[in-house]
Amino acid sequence: MSNETAAAWRCSICGYIHRGDAPPDTCPVCGASRQDFEAYLETPKSTPDTGPTQWRCVNCGYVHPGDTPPAECPVCAAPADRFQSVAEAARALSAPGKLQHVVIIGAGIAGLSAAESLRAASPDVEITLLSKEPTLPYYRLNLTRFVAGEVGENALPIQPENWYEANRIRLARGGEVTGIDLDAHTLMLADGQALGFQKLILTAGAHPAVPPFPGGTKEGVGRFRTVHDAERILAAAARGAKCVIVGGGILGLETAGGLARRGADVTLLEGHGWLLPRQLNQAASPILEQFVAELGVTLVKEARVEEILGDERVQGIRLRDGRSLPAELVVITTGVRPNSYLARIAGLDVNTGVVVDNHLRTSHPDVLAAGDVAEHRGTLYGLWGPSQFQGSIAGMNAAGLSSEFGGIPRSNTLKVLGLDLFSIGEFDPGDASYEVVDGSSDQTYFRFVFRDHLMVGAILLGDTALTSPVKRAIEQRTDMSGLLRKTPSAADVTTHLAERT
Image (cartoon, rainbow, N blue to C red):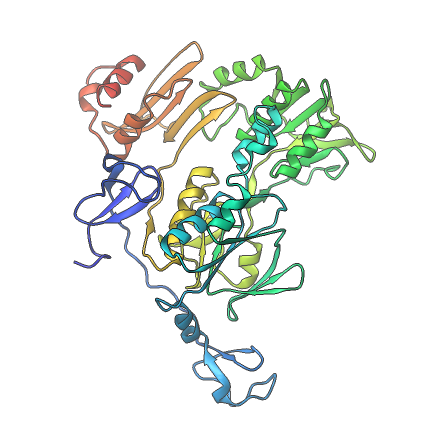
């Protein structure tokens, strides 16, 4: 039985796919145990569109489309025998045993994980890790803790500087890429240099999605994505300073809480009717809202910004309902967009993010993508865990292995301002074909959603001890008809699940 036709098992933690008669004892990507693997049913693979044949002039680099090369290069007049098939050249570069240089664009957790797994799989390959930022690669998750004063700047780097030297990974800080020439396997850098590659891994991440508010370029208005942004925010958020956070998602909540702990006067604007609508239903939100209020944050819901006020420097925000709020600092945390521009202009297949298959390959055989920039089966994860797992798998595949990413169930496991939250599946259904069981107590909320005797969604807020049994019940389609013969309470469901841990 070939590797491609063997039974497949997916790690429910990281999405890694194992092929064989049984799941492995341990996941090679995240270390999960055998019980965390589930049978994986694959969708049929479509035949890739290879596009037209292309020929590259080895003299000047001109690329000619067509089944045969031209009689003469229209740029340098080289004869037909000076043309080389682009596809054949790519296959030659990709041939097993000839891998010499892999370049990784982006030094977030996806890029760093790719470099680490690539080095483990290929001890001799040259690895260049390009970072647009001048700092060592850092824990982006710790930036809000840094703003809150919970950790110092020395806790931000993922690895010390000597780690890169010990692992023979060339870390090029401030290495901004301005263009990708896929035919020539070359990157153009901002300093004018060119950098060749055999395999390329795109882990360029994402950038803040900033709505076009009038006044958004005033001094004192900024976004929050990098260490530099964190330092700028701290410099402006003195004790008592009036700070407005626009956007009540995870980043907005944690930024608001961190600045409040610093003693700033913080107002949080949420455009929806409740906080975290992608992770919580409306009934759960009051618990989170109470928690936010106890931190000293003023919450304004259904708030839509009309204009940022002030001359050269921000002085306040006017909302569409006519209210004005004073502000000395405005931080916009309204989501992110993948950094897909370079891939798009290079000719790679890009939807919202760079489109990848299960091997995290893009539409070019020598280019892979992982993390926030990668779109897998229509999904952009935008989370630390999936970025780390995808990066590891992309690094393995760049080394010539055949590891697969089968996706991760749509779930959120978060700690928002110290409050635990887990949500999964269809937790807020819109019709009567679902059965819903929910309940709450002091700072905890449970919600379980069933359809056709199966659990299809859940929310755990404040107490997430049942996360694993809930995930297993949903992913393994466990029959809950015995529980549902009567009208169960939230306590009945939690007891039923706890017995199955």
